[in-house]
Length: 476
Image (cartoon, rainbow, N blue to C red; front, side):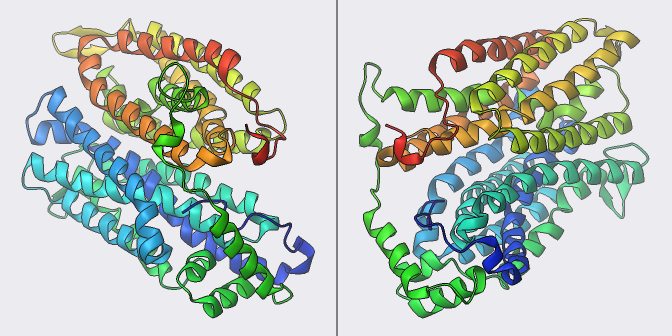
């Protein structure tokens, strides 16, 4: 299963089938609901962290394991989704993901024990992993070649919108509960509603999957050629030479090299140098601590004396900044190149993380009353928002663009799998260590993230290739 399934010809131009564009956009938006759920489920836990700690009376280490449990499911879901989709189809995978998302939302909202909550988090994570693979692949396979690049951006846009909406919903629920994460609304505590509300978009995702077509690529692989032609005519226009398109897709599938981990071996350090560069990009993207903001920001702001309602609002505003930064990256990644954008992001992240580390060093705990001086508190908020902006306009998008472009064709699929696995592992490390690091020394934690941002600068300059303007076939 690849996300470049129908490449290999210019396809009809935009002027040849404008009447089909609305239908294609609807199909793409429906598939991108998986990305929305990806973003929503990844960050919704942010609003429940402190309530879970209090409800189950647990320390930072146990709390971190519950928060990070979803990442175990993510890794498994991402690793298996491609093979499942090739066996039963993309639409069936979306429906399975919808069921798992729904079950996870209900189970997480109504846990009877800590292990039970962690289990539902793993199940939700599996659905996230599936959605992260299925959405981009399906969109690439149903998009007309002339529109594929723009339609592919729907997935990333849906993810950042999902993050923002989850924080807005959390903030709204907290206000209904009078600012108390454990305040009761209709018999349930506020944090339970936060986790349970995901049932709504999860069900919508499932319903939409029944009204969009199966991927032409899968239909052809399953011998359902006539159905594939019907879908191709719907998305590419009635003027398309359907027989030629079927032959083109069939030829592309038959010529694909199924790369394996063995293909990645070589060089002085076990793997090919380009594979190590991909792993480095994935690891640095996580080790700067971006998911501390998305998983723990409400808890973070409360830990420096900001009241819960304001902390939830700041979590929402950072997610809006994330959307703005993502749009900036999408506009400039092809104009100024991947490396310059990554360098701008690294410098900006290093400065903003360093400022946050300095500000957090003024945190005071006097008899359980936690506070920060007004100047340092304001600078910490500005630094956190600046960090998210610089990450989103650079590494948040550039890493995925580079990983999709820099590997030679013969190893691309396997190398992408290894790089993605490294990213999930690094994400897990940051997620599981932050509560303990925060208890030890919040400023010290941010010094560590600052160091990784600084180290990413020479890494980009020395090892990361520029892929702007190069065909995939040129990557040697």
